[in-house]
Length: 160
Image 1 (cartoon, one colour):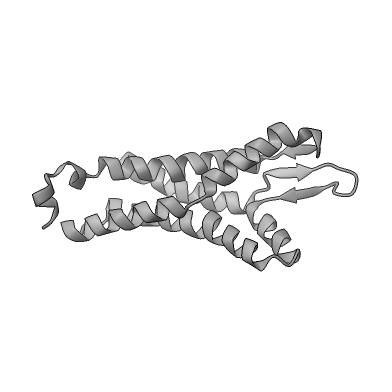
Image 2 (cartoon, helix red, strand yellow):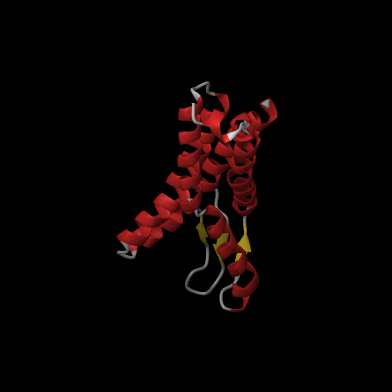
């Protein structure tokens, strides 16, 4: 049980590190030397007068994954009534559907593998942190919810 808790805390650290560590550098004639992390990507989109896209990136890449992991930590370490615990699991499942850091990682992989012909890019350490954050923030909360002792109770006991 404590192993999951420690890994959930590592997920929060990896998620917040992903926001600030550069994952990609573009090495093209006019774009040479531009490094991007999630925060810089949001800032660049905002500077292009795209506030809706910048807001969506903020919500789906930072807010929702953070709420999901923090909620899972509270659920994992917290003691609450069964009914409240089930409600929390439902909310976490909704947050999981709106957390798009895994989609962002897939798009980044496609850019790195297929986009090399259009734009020369260089991978930075933030890309590896992003992979760790995706693994920890997507897989671990689902695993923790699956291991939750409430899940094994009969339906009539869950309604208490």
